[in-house]
Length: 205
Image 1 (cartoon, rainbow, N blue to C red):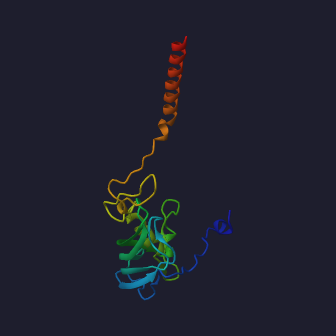
Image 2 (image 1 turned 135 degrees about the vertical axis):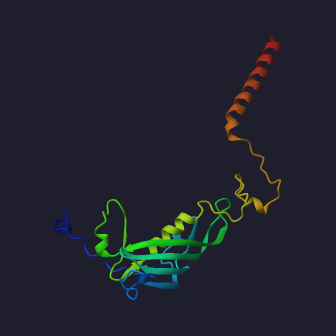
């Protein structure tokens, strides 16, 4: 058991840092007070999925409203960004854009202590700052397609040579036998040769 658990006190949270951290001191704690935030911030790390993402350093446009409520600070609005990734069929580079809805309540520390952390993960105001990075990242991941395409009609790659099918003639094909039939073909050829040998022997006798 940690000293903090023995004393019944939680360890002090560190002041968050990063481009998605907002200072809310001007908002105050009077319920109903509101402040709009419109800004662009760079993504410190890739935000999204391995197939489609906001690359590190890519700008995310935030159009938000910060509102003071009894429990904490309600953050709502949108986050927009340009995306880059790979086509799930042909692996060509894909460019897209996304706008996601953001709505999250950051609890004041004294309010957060009233919530059982084992039952619910809560976001907390720390030293009059809120960190939107996990909120925006989660909203992006839930909104992005699992298999992005460069074109809805993308035909993908040739399974034999790997060439992009959109770059070759429609009748592109390869004369290759299915390996699953190779063993059967060998048995058939062996059987045919055996039958011929048997007939030749019979004719000689």
